[in-house]
Length: 600
Image 1 (tube, helix red, strand yellow):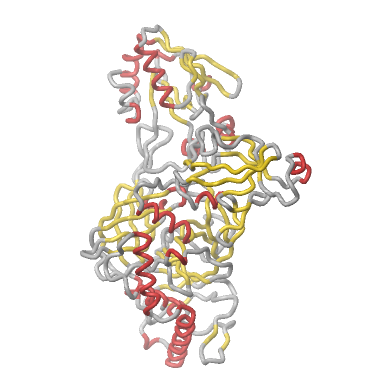
Image 2: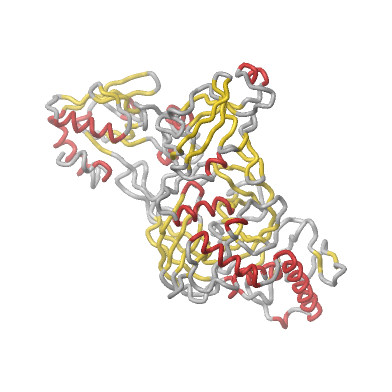
């Protein structure tokens, strides 16, 4: 039977359903509630645990917060409240048993009380994306919808906090929240966001009166779900206005690539469809009714069906803990090293590893990273934070075999993590203070404006994934030399960013330097001085303009082929004003460089 069952909350009159079927479903609900009660204890205990969890994760929960767990667990009954399908069988205790393959039918429920799920909300978002090709302007405003879950209600009034996916509110200019089965909408605002793992918190000041938060697991019970564990995905996918509930099972737990941020982090795959509009909705455990994840991506345009992904509870718990502790930066930490797997016995022997040693070898240490000055190329990392590494870079962590990055991402920036390693065949123990990773080519940038400067009709900006994606999301049509820097570029003291000459706005001041000849080259230096990043480049331009030099000489090129661009300083000010008027450019530089270029 196909896994998962979509339940629409359109109510049917009981008179339209045969009495025998209604009676059978009532018996089914009672039996399933008994099963859940045996697994979770009494109704009062889960309610107390849910309230305590909210307090531990986000401080005082406010409101009563009681009853949410018990009511959420009724989802088990409501979601299967339908006549038995062919593969179902009659249980010995008088109610229908759920087969190992789950449910595959799509059913309309006649007695589902959607009031009990008011904590699941729809977000209506207006967003404004920057134009990374013409960075002085923005694209057209867009409207979209997503889902979220109320996880805290204020003790007084109707305010509270809503957990959702970061991509739902990315680049937002206006947000409204609408409760399930309610026509009213209230304004909301983003209070915290972590784009790397696609999580965000949205606050409202009203509208949550009488809403009980979705129960969070106690801190001590936060865990990864087990394979084949049944979950429910709640949200508001496109194609309807009512709350939708999809049933599925956990099919995979691993470190995956997040499409929103292009970062690798812990994620869980479920065989429940996550469609547009579902993103940000809560994923609840069938057993406890508690939050076990946040839906964040599916497979758009793929042949893969009925498969989606959720941010798991440990990642959510870390995010919320970071929000509560304002002194901790929310970004994910990284060692900032390149690693080689040690699957080769010959290589392990060359590195003087014992038969019982397993780990990975450091091949490069990024400039400014956590590991700079601590690790060196040739080091073999055996343990990270007390967790032993395998030769393929994986480790047993949170009860699963996961990539090493999951160990580090459970920590915060500024944490001190112990390492055990081999250096020259000798075992050592060192401590590393975790930092965020700064990539040579930034990616996953939201809620920001692109840095840029125009001088002599030449547009300069830092290379970024967002800029490369202007040629298409898969980068297959993007300039090869720039794509190589994105994938394989390595930062250093003199190379923290790649400054690209991205456009040539033709004018007398730049005659002879066409886009075909120098366009898309990256800047190597200004007047003989190397350029490490965009800030250093702009500072060098100012020095060239104000230093009494007759020319500004730019060394540009691709790969190992250099070229020289020369601009006459005396002509720049008048030419830039003419170019701005001719090409309808309101500003010649982004706000990032106002202080550096003030008065020019």
